[in-house]
Amino acid sequence: MDTKWFFPKIGVLTRETWSQTLAGGSEFETGNGTLKVVNASEIDGRMFLDGERVSARAGGTIDAIDPATAEVFAKVALGDKADVDAAVASAQAAMGSWAGLAPVRRVRLLNRLAALLREHSRELAELESLDVGKPLRQAEDDVAAAAGYFEYFAGVADKVFGSSIPLGQGYVDFTLREPLGVSAQIVPWNYPLRLASRGIAPALACGNAVVAKPAAEAGLSIIRLAELAVEAGLPPGVFNVVTGGRETGAALASHAGINHITFTGSVPTGIAIMKAAADNVVPVTLELGGKSPNIVFADADLERAAASAATTLMQNSAQTCTAPTRLLLEAPAHDRFVELLATRIGTIRLGRGLDNPDMGPVVSERQMQRVLGFIAAGLKDGARAVAGGRRADGAGRNRGFFIEPTLLDQVAPGTELGQEEIFGPVLTVTTFGSVDEAIAVANGTPYGLVTGVWTRDLSRALTVAMAVKSGQVRVNSYSVEGSIGLPFGGYKRSGFGREQGVEALANYTQVKNVMINFG
Image (tube, rainbow, N blue to C red; front, side, top):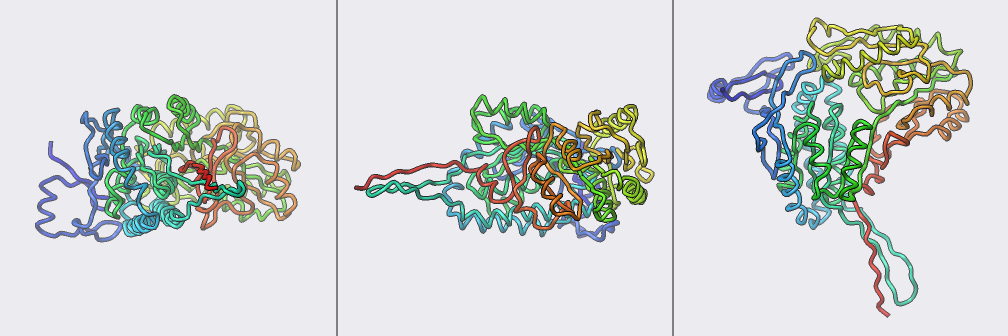
């Protein structure tokens, strides 16, 4: 079978076409503009170990599927335990020189990597859009965020301070913050590049080596990130990527050579990772599911709050742990808010991510069926469909995994729809009558990641913020530029540990105390 290369803006090229193209120096006209083939990045799906692309040792592959068309567009290496062993060994070998590098040099290298991410923004965004299905402009925002993580943590790489502790005359006592060792980064499919960078950047800044394992559904941008890291000057082996499925992730989580695990994903998988880590007494950082309430009081700016809620659906088809998909509306605001929101939802355009619609498909057939199952169960439990509620054709692409943007009213808090994370373009509406009731409903799920509050009453906003059990509270805005510096993590079954901001450095360092008697 002839080897093929995939180019984001061109399509699949055979070896013969590739040779002819190189010889002729051709350019290709596409919907996204003109691209020189020689400047494109081939997608061959091999993993990245010890500074180079390699195939899986057993030769297995998994299909990379475009969620908008349900078609295979690339093959990705299917790693196993042997590949994990090789990746961990490579990271261990590189660990000493990286940890011993002067911090100011790590600053320069990570800033160089951030610059390369920005330079390759379009390429990486197209990889992400193909892999996950999200609109191209959203994928470009993710690349910018990924670069921002490396810039932020490059800025603190030479500021990982210890402290001195007074013990009296004749003694000096101080602490050192040292890297943990090899950090396993197990990354979900919804924001591959962004969430990988969120953990990898502080891990590298603190002097750790990294083995990343992307989700089976979406790993191409992370492989490319590792390749760019070597181009930026990071030593081979400091950042490795092993691709594969659940078995690959389990092999990495249970590996005796791993010193720390960061995982973002589902609660059941997080529990399994904790159990595996316990066998090796390895610390873990977990960001798990969310069922984030978005509390709208009658005195709020309803137009602005409705616009924000509609954006929730369009952002990666609401396949976001932080998505405020659980709308809690104060009774006097209910009718007007639902009307405003339904009108906005009716204007959302569906389509393939590369065509830059408002909203793309969900990531897979399995995810689509899961979300449709939640909708069906909710309607059976008494919810009312104000908008959507069915599979969509995705602007004529019937084979894609498209779901209509959906608004379900009259959702009881104790039902499955009111309790479980849907992870798809579905907003649920529950009405409340008092501040106390709003707080009780907001806290009435197993999760506690983010809470949104919309009100002009500052006292009421602070009352709710102090009472809700969630890692972040966002008042009168659900997103803000510069949020990389804000500590992020969950309460309850949403996980523990904090990512982003300087608090993240605690995940990737251990404290050593040194006491000297010089008297």
